[in-house]
Image (cartoon, each protein chain N blue to C red):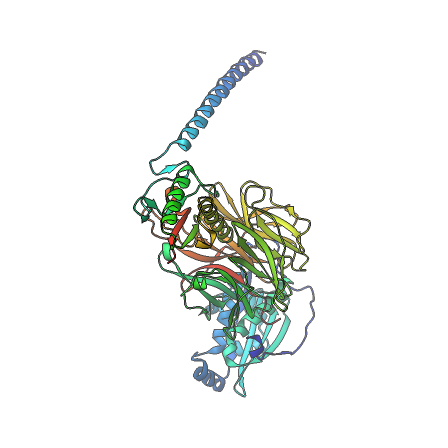
Length: 173
Length: 446
């Protein structure tokens, strides 16, 4: 009998402990979620989300006209910064009407080869469409996808991958 | 190539199965069958003549080494150490002393004899069941001496088939992309080699980027992607003549090519205005058909062996998934529903499974699922691997794997690997350079 009572007391204590633990887990979990959000939104100076915002790899078609735009993982949507770059390219192309260009679309190494070829093509075309809305004729633009075949950064880390997800405008003549 | 090879097959004594030894290949085989491969015996005169023509001291023993390596890499057999063999090869071939072979725990025994007959290579071999004390099979081949490695592969195929009940995959070749140079500017060439890595040959010079070569059903033609003149297009290559031609006249990138199972069509993706769809082209009448019509990416098509269905990769759901449709493009059904992204579906030559690449939580997997998407099974996990290709008997997958680079971006490599359908027996496939995009041929001597 005595033993049974003790056991009951123990169980009561256990349940309380369980409740406390559950609550702490909830709090802990909430903290984790918050901090995860905080880190993913934080700009590292080189990346916004997982889009590259640095300038290490950027070359210039003319003074103040960057040659490339960057994309998020699996995406071909142009960011605000990308649209600004492409408007500068369009202005430069309107001034230099004899120049033709190739848009080279690239993907990072974290995808299958064939899908990445299609993704590179889709990215280059996103840039092409934007240039066309700013008055650049489609017959001055050709598109070439390299998929994941020509990374600029050989690293295997998120920053390197963000530099490699790109569409580069190259003078063709 | 196959036409050039004169291969005579003569049955000496067709023997019947009498409840003899069997190897179960449906499970991971953790107890490979102990087998003794006695060096094939050869008379002195033949030995000398072949030494002159083939630059091999003892061609009989070389052929047995080919057989031994094949059996070992299959993971189903354990070839025993030759130093422990008690009986001389020529006598064992006539009548093995089964007690001797039993003593070294051999359950099966391969013996053989090589002879020069009119400057041709004549090889006969026998397979013995040591425990039952019986002959299981006896065959002889006559061929040109240069084919000596193929003789070893064909013998392995016969032994494998006799002991497992399924066709072998040893007299086959692998076409792949040989890689060299820095990761940011790889030089890629088409290369072909025997299944065991021998007879490696480069088919292109590396002047332009080449990707994803695949054999036609007779393994004489290859379709692949080439960046010749910076125009990525699907090409066709005749391995024997070296003649290459572009497939179709598309105003943009064509990629991800494969042959139809009858070899008459090429199925591939064509990318236009940011949208990739699947097309076929008939190689005889050059008629092009559009198979999918969807604003998403549709790529990596692969026919079922009966040609009635196509599995492919699409991101129409928002992310890369595997779909199956009828070969005319109707009845599109998504079949992959697990967590993660799915790519590179390839239909098994047996028709019952689809192999794929899966990306989940930063890891890449090679797996298989039934053709309705059920029974998903992941065979291997790694930092990066993709593009499985089936052995012709549907028992083994070959794929490529890339390494993670270090903090300085160095240490990159790409290699070919193989794994059994069971998930066991993962092996590095030796290549002289880095390698990717492997494609397995059909059985050459069918």
